[in-house]
Length: 100
Image (cartoon, rainbow, N blue to C red; front, side, top):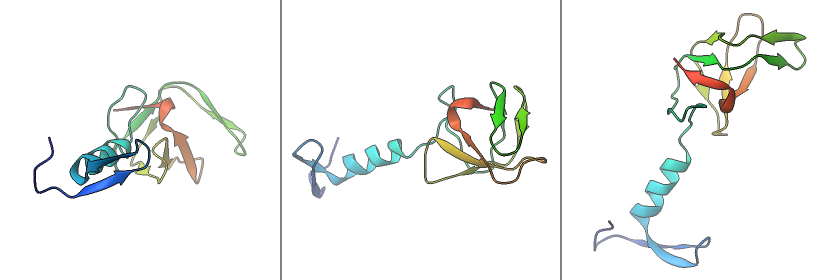
């Protein structure tokens, strides 16, 4: 619940004045990056592929169960930047990975 000394900000989406702390909490939740099971991902986590993925431009397929180490989060909460031995500049969608 918002405190009495909280600043209020106009929320254009709802057309209401809302406490700044409430909007900040909502923004933080929206920025969370989660895997296919809803587990929060962070920089440096290892993930496992949950299905075979054909990699466009590389002419190969990453198999289900492949472990990707040391992921990096991107500006898009639905994508993670990855390193793989055979593929440079690999970006995976979070819907296809599960945290180890």
